[in-house]
Image (cartoon, rainbow, N blue to C red; front, side, top):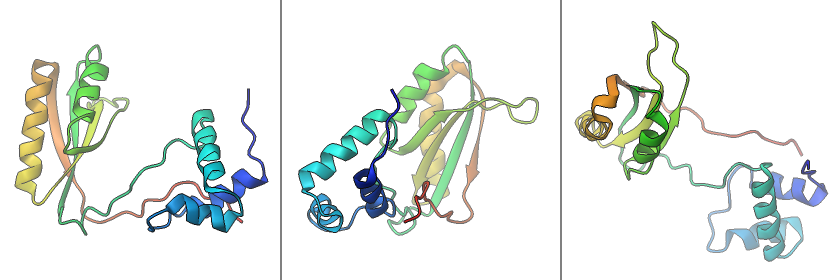
Length: 161
């Protein structure tokens, strides 16, 4: 069954798509802006998330402002039969902000597992990568670290008012 966004859902999305208000009760602030009770805002957001209309609600930190100056996308060539299970383990590490599987593009790009790590410096990122490497063990054939050299604007799809 297809989920259809009604006018209220669209107003909630427009009120939250740039981020939740940084106030003690963000859903109450959204509710006030939309003109409905906070409980209804939360119910509708849960329904939109359950339907897939909204993928997730999460924090998007500015790692540089938090003192993490080295951001490295670690890329790994992991046995295909083990990549999902190992990827789940890697994704659960405290120092990994996101981890996902991607298709290889040999011979130029043999990597199928990506894990983003943030450190105060490159040495810290390299220590985290070494930890990941120990977990992957013999299932990993090669890896690399791709460091960020600038901050990219992180935004999702926006609905025009």
